[in-house]
Image 1 (cartoon, rainbow, N blue to C red):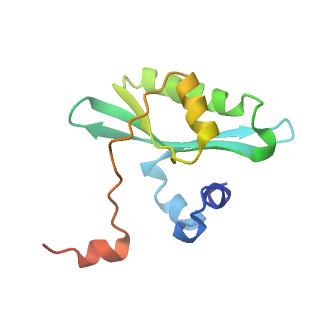
Image 2 (cartoon, rainbow, N blue to C red):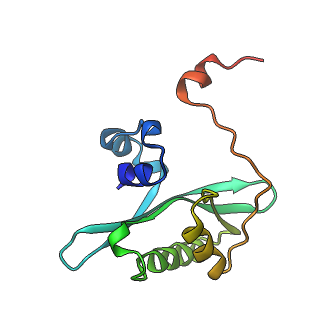
Amino acid sequence: MVKELALFEKFIDKVTNTLELMNEEKDYFHCIIAETNKKEIVGIAVYFFAYYTWVGKSLYLDDLYVQQSCRGQKVGSKLLKEIFTIAKEENCKRVRWQVLDWNKPAIEFYKKVGATIDGSWYNCDFDKKRIGEFKI
């Protein structure tokens, strides 16, 4: 599902994570899986808890993905509902995620459920190689 999401988002060349690494780092994230009655995985929500100085404890939804063939069947809504249930149970002050600016169906879905979409922040990333090379 992770590679399928990366392919959908047109960033397949950015995926360096592996199943083995995810197993090693399983204490750092949580995953909700949507399955069919036949136990086929059709959607995922990957999240972790974060702390933001302005608001406090938050839930960061890193990935919400539903296979193309299952969109429009409320799979994403059910995953998002579960995310918010967890955020309430964990006393989170905010739920945050990102959406690509070209993903209009997702943007419309998020607006429909009441999300505030802020276009004023940019991502700042360093990959592992550049982390090791960092200097000022």
